[in-house]
Image 1 (tube, helix red, strand yellow):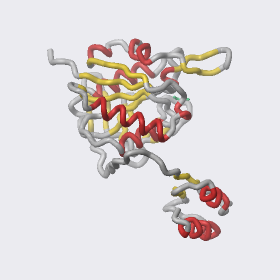
Image 2 (cartoon, rainbow, N blue to C red):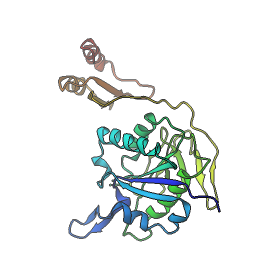
Image 3 (cartoon, protein in one colour):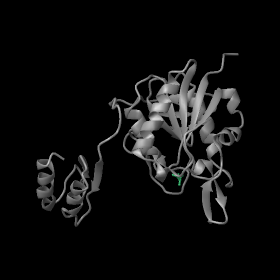
Image 4 (spheres, protein in one colour):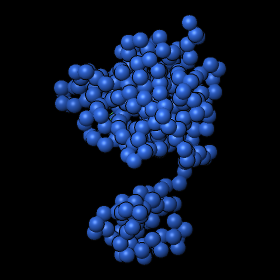
Length: 262
Ligand code: ASP
């Protein structure tokens, strides 16, 4: 039998690590990283798994700074002797954002696979254990090398830069609109049909500048842009309509912001 590869699982929280609490009538963080791995039958046969807890909160509490810190922890771990890849367990709400941040900071060939769950750990038929199983299997696979950062749920592997959550409750929620998934974690193998092209990576020493996002909506005026500038942001991402269109009323605000160096 071939020697088992080592995979490090970083746990951050999310529904995957939550259970129903009747006192709050909702899901609350309840499962430790070690318990999360222990609930996955056969995980020890796939790889030599080590769990490292990063946090245990709903993913709306994730911040760019925490993502940056997580990235640094993962990149250091991937340099450790014998480590084949990393898995991150996360909440589904913002997993696409964390995955993207990890991807633009990731340069090694070793795979990073993020996974999550739509059903809590104590629900009927939780999807977390199977998702963790497939994520570890993929992270340990030769096929995943060089594919960058991926998001895997429901056996489907998506590229970090293309994946989106498309339904707020159904387990079949992750999709890569237009481009499609890149691979599939099958019972006996991990299959890829595409390699994500056009990945960009950066090497910032730290994240310091405030950058705001202003979303276009019909009826938009200049006030959100003025507000962002007044708050001292260094840059604004303006999410326009279609190919980036915004009504003419916004143009003077853009000019005033850029005149100020924003
Ligand atoms: N509230 C959860 C979160 O942490 C949702 C989920 O994980 O599915 O994003």
